Image (cartoon, rainbow, N blue to C red; front, top):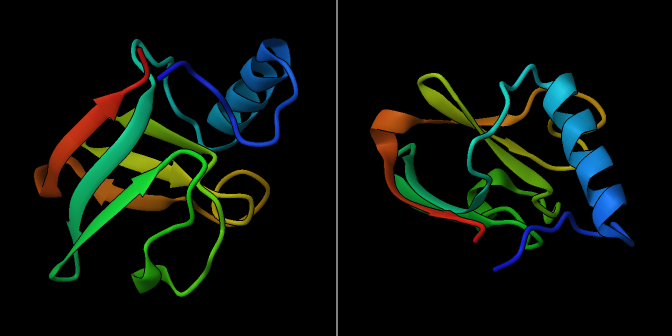
Amino acid sequence: MDFFVPSATSPQQAEAVFNSIANHVSAPEQDQRVYKLVWQHEGAECSCEIGKPLPDVFRTDETVLAIFECDDMYKICTPNRGAIKFDPIHAMKSSVSSVEYFS
């Protein structure tokens, strides 16, 4: 899967949006960009991927815009959780069972 950001109309815009979100959530530079993540959240297995809605456990149908690998956690960003306001969703690395990267 080639890198993209939902709603971006060009590769340049995708890069700009990705970098803006990374700056907002204080994410380090990403050697690889996460496409899909599977982890345990409050006893339930959750899966999210770029361009798809968050898992039902988060009680919103917001689209995942970016996932950042940060020290001991991943930061999952949607328009209202990390991209524009509020904090992103955190998935601790110790709870992650699978990570897929963009090619």
